[in-house]
Image (cartoon, rainbow, N blue to C red; front, side, top):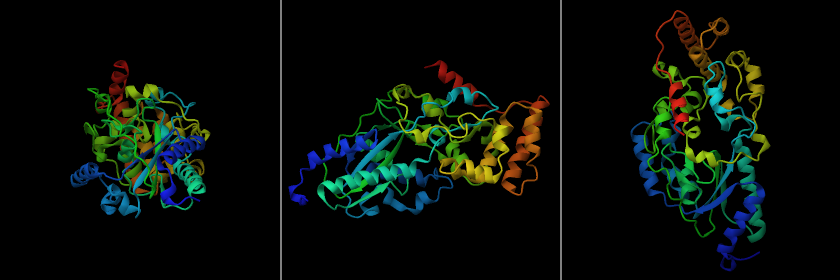
Length: 376
């Protein structure tokens, strides 16, 4: 094995990218560990309380923006991405515009990516080690406090769009990110330039107005936060705006012009399971806890928990077109053991009955989506 002084790090970086492609990564890049501006942005976001109930965002302190504190000895970060948009999924807009069906964010339709990403990063580390000998590293896949989008931007994998997601001109935003923190002084790649221009489609489409300005996200209003991270009751005023989204939200990605260039995933594990790319709400609401656990095994959806799942689907049923079937499904859960579920079921029943009686409808987000499609 070579000593550090004998290693050609420029050549090694090129080989690492080639090995990454062989392992199935769609792109790799190398970043330094300087994130002062991003740290300031994070501090301001936390100070304003925009992280909501995600207390872990504060508990981890600034290690999120200081790679060398999270993993001592780190001098570079190898950032990697894997496309996830499923080739065979139901058309997203058709599902969103059908209030009888439940919408699940496209990233969550198949296998949870965390183990796949970590396993692949470990294989990359093993390949590097077989070439140069032992070196310091640690693999991450949304498994620790890491500013992954900022690092990916600095590694040349894309720029951070106005919706706060990473964007690439040739791949859009439908991809997962992972990192390999390392003590190897590899040459860094040039950061990506920004190409959002004057476009504000992602800001305009957001159903709950969670994107308060370019690169400004209030998680407390974000549907992904409300249906996944939040474990308490969903604020009443936001429930009508959630529509039929039962796990996450993709609206800001669906209207982004750069996603015209996105490539479907090559990973069979990310293909939709159990028809969750457009299942009927009534069917989803009928799942027992055992069925929920069985059908979501190895999937990101399990993160919501069974009570959270019933809460989310109850809200969607309340927003659905009124029908005897929806009311019957909700009534079957009126005495559910969970107070959280009961409260949302009661709200949903009241919404169904109000609409059947011809009551005025709350503000809906469906019109925004159609307008955005017409503008493309």
